[in-house]
Image (cartoon, rainbow over all chains, first blue to last red; front, side, top):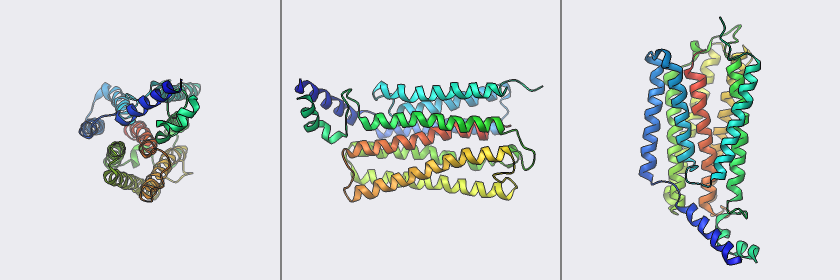
Length: 110
Length: 203
């Protein structure tokens, strides 16, 4: 019993020490994030027309997920951490979308 | 028996682990970050609601300096890279590089906060005070709260460097650095949202 527990603990600790990517891979991810930020900023100077808002939202979500998955190690860590974080995030989005809807935020003002 | 094995086994070096096999410290930090989503969600949605409510004072698109804020955003984004490199060095037990990356992260964070102070000062001179309009109140509250979070992160980073030099970090050092890193990256992801919703999307 105790041996099994000890083994599990040791295995988890071992994984914890080696999860993640190499330094060079982190630098490559940072370069991707920098490029995405550059595209975001370009929307201020270049007219994206009807694609303006979708482009910004998609880029924002991609950057968020990349940082959370790779820099915060959610991709490699125990899934429980992902559930905790994303449930808080989704709860916040649901609550405040409801809040904004009560103030008719999403209705186009003509 | 199992309890004895946990308290005397590998667990000692890796902080308090629960019977689920997860670190209690990390579990606590992730729960805290999940609750922080609700805090910033409230501040962001209040700003979205009030950004068009300008009875007096400048409008958002009249005062925002997008090139300046873009550079600030880039600096904060790169501080996430230096932070993850510090965590990586801590996991390799490379103390010298860990301290170096932690100090660089703190410096980049301080540069970001300095930029925010400059921005606030410039906005105030252009006529946007905290009580000038609902836009001003919600803008300063949102970005101010974020700035305070970055400042707390800088204090945590410098405390970590100081404690490491004095060999006073309790438990597993790599995990402690990772916990501070999680907080720092969270501050970064919040800014990713603020930068898009507040600065890049016009009122």
